[in-house]
Every structure is written in C-alpha cells, then in structure tokens.
Length: 381
Ligand code: GLN
Image 1 (tube, helix red, strand yellow):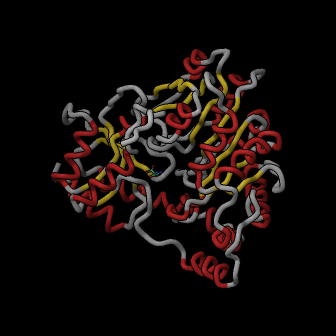
Image 2 (cartoon, protein in one colour):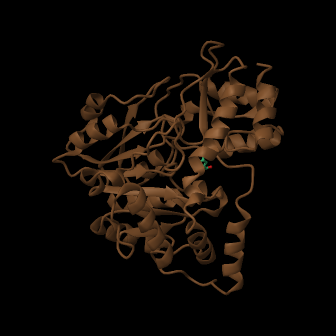
C-alpha cells in the first residue's frame, strides 16, 4: 500500500458528515448539518429544467453567466449601495466553500497569518493550513460571543495577511454590529491586511437587524472578498452554487485560481437562478420566513431543560446544557442521537484548541412538524 504524508495530519472528517451519518444510522431527527428538509420553490425548478431543455448544457463563461453577474451587481447596489462591475469584480463559484478556498489560495503564502473568530465555520482553518498559512484564533465565548477588538489587535503581527469574518455567524447566530465594523475599520486602517467576509447568511437576520455587509463600507470593501451562497438563498444547499465579490485587482488573482480549479460552474442552474432572482422577494422575504421558524423553535425549546443562547441571524440556534451536567459536548451530542433521537452539532468542533463550553447547535431550517417532533424528544432530557 502506498501512503502519502498527510498535509492535514490533525484534521478529521468534518463534523457535519459525522453527525449526519450518526443521525441516519440511529434514525434520529437530523438538526445537525445545516440544510432545509423542505423543497425549494417549484418556480425555480421550472426555470432550471427549462434551461436544460432549451439546450443550455455546455460550459458557462469562466466568471459565470453575465446576466446573473449583472443581477448580483444590481442586488448589491440596491442593498449595500456598493458598486461591483459584473465584468471584472463578480465571479460565480461552486458554492461558498469553493469561493473561500479560492480566495485563500490566491492570497496566502507559507508563513502568512490569518485571524479567525472561533467558534468558526470548519472550512477556514484547514484551508489556511493547507496553503502553509498560520491560524491565529480569537476565541469567543457564550452567551454573547462578543468580540473585544483590543484583544483582536493583540493578534496582529507583521505577518498578518488576512482576517476572516462571518456575519451572521455559523454556528453562534451572532451578527456584527455597527460598533464592530467601526472597530474593524480602525484596526485595518493604514495596513494592507485583507478581509474575507463570509456572508452566506446575509438575508437571514432577525428583529429588524440590518446586515452589516463589508460591501457597505468603502474602507473595508477595497480590501475584501465577499462570499455568498445560493444554497442558503434558494433553500437548495445541494446545488453548490455561490459567488464572490472583490475589487478588480483582487478578483483578477481570484480568477487565476478559479479558472484552473473549476473553470466555470453549472450552466442551466445559473440560467434558472438568474430568471428566478428577477423577483427580489425571493431573497428579501427570507428573514421573515426564518424568523417565524426561529421564534417557533425557541418557544418550544423554552419548555425543555436546555438554556437558549441569543440568535440574531443564520438558521442555527445554540443551546447550553452546562447547568445540567459536565459531559463533553461531543458525548452529549452522541447521547442525544442514540438515546433521545435528535442530532445536533457540538460547538467544540468549531474551535482549533480544545475548548468546550457545553454548547450544542441545532438547525431550524426545518418543517414545523420536524421541529415539533424534535423538541418533543428533547423534553425527555
Ligand atoms: N453549512 C452547513 C452547516 O453549517 C453544512 C455544510 C457542510 O455540510 N459542509 O451545517
């Protein structure tokens, strides 16, 4: 047997795969991996199948279909008052993950340091390491997961190349405030530090909160890759389509990698999405849609012994069980699957150090009856 020396010796199979598999094996209700258990809009499916039937089945242009890029430019201009040129500053990707990996690949050299905020979405740290970069983690803690920007400043060094932000945040459901943005502007001013802003939940914010897109702030926008995912926008995580925005010079480097990684992405889906997005309500209505689910789920969970943490955005609700027992979160999550029939994600999986606050993450992008059945089971805790 030929073996290769691992480039990621300390990386295991992603927790999403682990927990979804465990849920399946034990026929548990799967609130772990983030995906809807209801179908997307039939109108969207019709647009896509129509594109296939009309013969749009060959390669799309390398940066994506121009018409879709134009619609994205319009959306970003309407929502964030930001100008991105469809020709040179917008690229359609095979999901948010590929956009993140491509942006990192275009920028990170061995020895470069990248600041991330943990608990962090799990694709950041391995990608940084694969490129020879060093992960500098700012560890946030429940219940508020607030950021002390003076402490972030202490993580800066001459080798700091990039900061990765994620708002609304997965897994915590926290969002960046205007004060956070001001602190970030102050921190990055007069540096050439880049920003990768993962905004895949940009349309899922609650209680009238406004999404603080990096694109809104010229001082940040000029140094940022902004990443979005159609998976979240269209309730179609399996389609793996998204996009990246960046100023021309940065996008030029991004595309050098993109063209030799995927070249271009799924043509009929880009056609279908472009037709669908002409109706802006498709994404402008998402916050209200998910707020109803969040409120419903939280009201039910209040009857259990679990403690609810705040949730201002995304489709994830975190709960603490620290007052109930001292079990490790991975053990607690496993027990919930095996003995109670509900799958969640242990939040320690999103820290690079061994940090366990006894917090679990549930996905509420589910049918009402799924959430009801899950909480019925959690009542037995
Ligand atoms: N983003 C989804 C989540 O947080 C899952 C993505 C994945 O499975 N890679 O659950």
